[in-house]
Length: 292
Length: 285
Image (tube, rainbow over all chains, first blue to last red; front, side):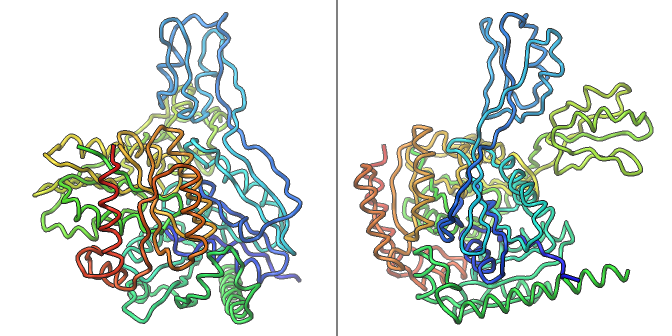
């Protein structure tokens, strides 16, 4: 029997710790894998993979619009909208579309049936290939406030893909991150060796603890000094899967959007070993679960 | 009183490091941390006083009274956020619920009500200076609203100061857009990587869409000189004020791990920030 494919979410709390670096390189050393960039506000994975045969699809949300001939100005919709996205001013119905959450309430409760819905574009998803890797990215349109529908679209597209999937999450620990990790089999946390890094690792660790997901930490950019993030992991007994040293050459390759595991054998081995560790842990966990 | 907002698009380029240094250099009496998803500025400000804490209410969440529920399924069918599921009883997933109230209004037996929901905590430090910050509860949404609350709390406690420094959050979405209002200038901290350049361009476009004046500086410029030159050239071509470049400096990391700002120790990064601060003062509208 073929081994079950794994869905891994790479996250960090703090920005710039190396989520994209890690997920891009892990995907690269895993055959036929899928890389999904859920950092839709600032997607960067495509800069590394430079995917070919790009297919782009718009992501839309539903927003109401009015038939002025039917609207009697009763303001039922304005009163109902909990997000204050609607107004009726000087005989005119108005929508502030960036604030609309697309709940559909205004349309449901309009007594005159004066409201219907139309699609509004908030961004796009792109799918392409880079060598044997499927690369998917979400891109939020400038000025839009929420990328959650784009993330949901990406995850939906990936649902039927029977390959190992690497999800590059947005920074933070808000709802947008939760959407990205909901279906993951494993959470890989990346942390920097600073007080900031440790503080944000703590926040994101609390988040994944809430979901009771199997997890491990990679300490990135390690220097010869006290590492507050490492101390945190030891105190909490969180498994440290790898320590990646701060390395000027590595930094340079990465800053030029090159995939280090494709450029350098040593790093290819490091990431292969890391992938092995994660895969073993997930499969052990699954075996353990099936015995329970 | 002028408000300087620090943003970056990409995370981890050094917003908080630079914001904390600017607060010290400007002797700012008012400042705020708007990165409510992952606040860090308080780690460097060494406040001895306890903050005044208050609860932040996000959108309310639907609660179903299973004793009254008729199991008609109308709520589940009409929830756009797929927040309602049927197990033994009808249940609301509070993380998915956005508090729109559609289920409450549709329920034929009024078994559903919207309940207040604490989505974070606001903190206000008041001593010789005013420092407003907050932390969003994990997995909560609507961080833009909390950012607005952080700024409101700061401005309600006005003291005499020339400059207000606001540390922003990464990205270009709702918390960033919320932080833009009222800023006289946005200082963008860029990083000399292709990712950093891509993200810088997106945050500049975002700020300009909301008519904010922007200026750029580069952090860790010497980790990739060629890319740093590209950023400088980009700023020149787009007529964006370029305020300076800060070298990679191990001493900066060590200072931060000792809860110090980079200008509290003598180091190259600190000196570079001093010079960019002077330039920022000259052009702050």
